Length: 112
Picture (cartoon, rainbow, N blue to C red):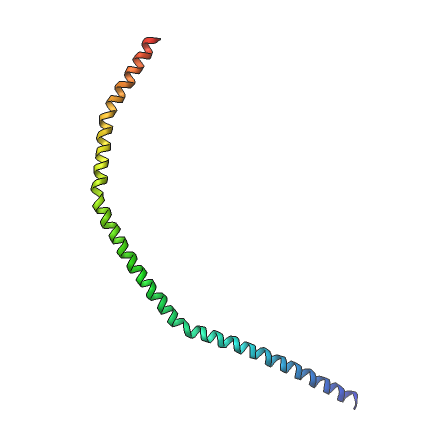
């Protein structure tokens, strides 16, 4: 066999190795794409479940917020009454505090 024949055989073997490697790589890629296809096929059902659960959660949240608002409306008069009591006690104690401060100042002035 001549050198040209040996070269052609070597090129053929190299081409065969490249072809086998390319086939193996493409087969692996096809397996990955099949897995992606299965995942994508399942997505609409999963998204439907997620949206359904999200809708229920929002509905429960709205009910809870409504109940909290009702309870706050019920408690509002108590807060207003507590504020009124605080204001009244402040109005009653302010003159007493001023009187006490004035007495203290007069006492310290007399001691000087």
